[in-house]
Image (cartoon, one colour):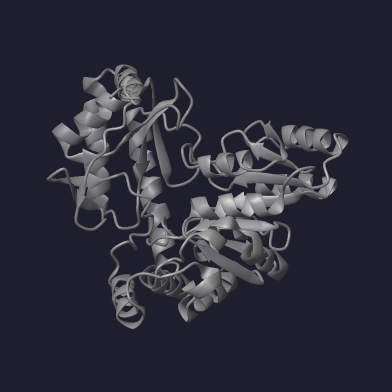
Length: 395
């Protein structure tokens, strides 16, 4: 019998030869500043666990209690029998935290973007998207029948051009979409200028705040709070799997927006609900963020210290203005070699990132510092990077 997937072997070998093959490490035990990967205890510079909440005792206790009260699986989609009182409570708390009338929770930030874009635009509409937006936005736009155009990264003038052209082409509605914090480069969208352009053209504004949630704004309330744009951004998408330390996504905005998404967001309608354990742990994370800004402040202090050491050693850290620290290396093969030596020789877990996640020739190692890293952790990690950098001729 012929193997109709044999061509995939050649494709995989091509990835290996180009330095684009992803080596997947296997984690044993909880997330933290140190973890066990492939049987080794290593310094963890990979996780999106910004505030160190993924194994926080309060979140673990909340999840356990929810399993006892509600069981393990949701058993249904939200519109049939999958909406619990925990879901209602989480959505009310998220809305309060974000300072908006309403919020809706979904299975992931990816699902939130897919469901929202498809529910807001269609044939006769247009989407205008930043060229470096996350893959979930790219895929969400591709799934609509709307016209689409790309504007130069974080460039309000080019955004104005693109929206002007969409209006001139007769678009019924125009949806402007941007990441809040760009996950690969660590820079922040000029959301104030983006909102001003959208207002001039009567366009909707949607921001994916996955890497701004728990990081930017008062006590981690996100990019809209950071810029003081309450009431001027129509759609805020967030994730609960990064700074919140759990799993899930949500959309925050007006009451009518959330009601419409309950009726038309396809992941909400056609995929089982977020588990009770996840929802309860997210509620515990909101409790912690509302109670204190200490973790957010510690995250930023750690990020500043680590960047100072890395820049002092001579590394190119790109355009980052957030705790995301891209160590720019250029070629994917070099980035992969650098990552392997960090892991094998220095017990530092920091993965290489190359095409298609970032453009060709822009490969890097993305370091994710957290509030849970100690000063010694940061110094040890920076020293390890410097040793490997010298050994490979990067420095």
